[in-house]
Amino acid sequence: MACKYKRVLIKISGEALAGEKKTGFDFDFISDVCEVLKANSDKGIEIGIVIGGGNFWRGVKDGAGKVERVSADRMGMLATVMNCVAVCDVLKQMGAKAKVMTALEVHGVGERYDTQKAIEYMQQGYIVLFAGGSGCPFFSTDTAAALRAAEIHADAILLAKNIDGVYSDDPRTNPEAVKFDHIDYEEVLARKLAVMDTTATSLAMDNSLPVIVFALAQPENISRVIEGEEIGTTVS
Image 1 (cartoon, one colour):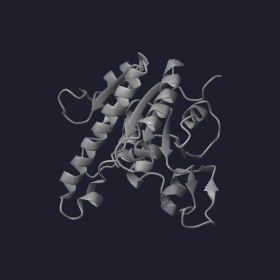
Image 2: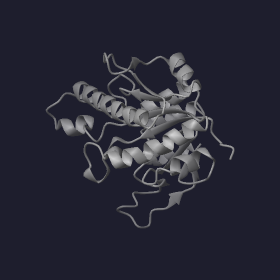
Image 3: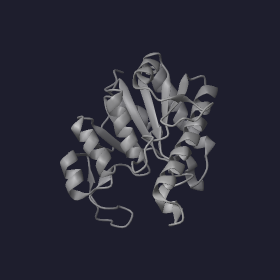
Image 4: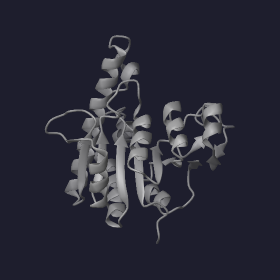
């Protein structure tokens, strides 16, 4: 089957890696996700990945007023590094080609991020995991995902979440919330919908990057989106 997208940036939440435990790693689930990633890479899909750090640390929220914002954000960046190293190792044990590139200098963990080198790796069949967020405090991993997607000229951002799309309100608290199949960036921003933060949404809009929001609970959804099946919500 011909795939709709040739090069994708997949954003995975840190919480998703923890499964029901909410913290740490659920390696059974991570393995399921990695199997799908490897299968798509084997088909020639070029894959970049940004992973959040929420299974270990959620920046200012976890700092509880005791950790200054810049320090809290840097701790979050380090959490994303741990997540990328773990997922990279699972991929390698499956026989996939994978590399960690970091926005931070963390010797012995991964290569320092370089846009052209990342593109070359993906063209060579490597799954590239972008660790350390954007490398700057005050920017979320959502923004890092939009930034890396723009830099590597991705065809789309695949936003793998714990919810199956974009809703008019929180479906967990409002049973009347309506799910969108398609929505434009301007409406997301105007209605302050919880897709990505406003910086990330604006960056995707400015670079005409479609964002497909879907549930990661079924890892095979990654393949379905890449192949062009209309699931979740497309923001464009």
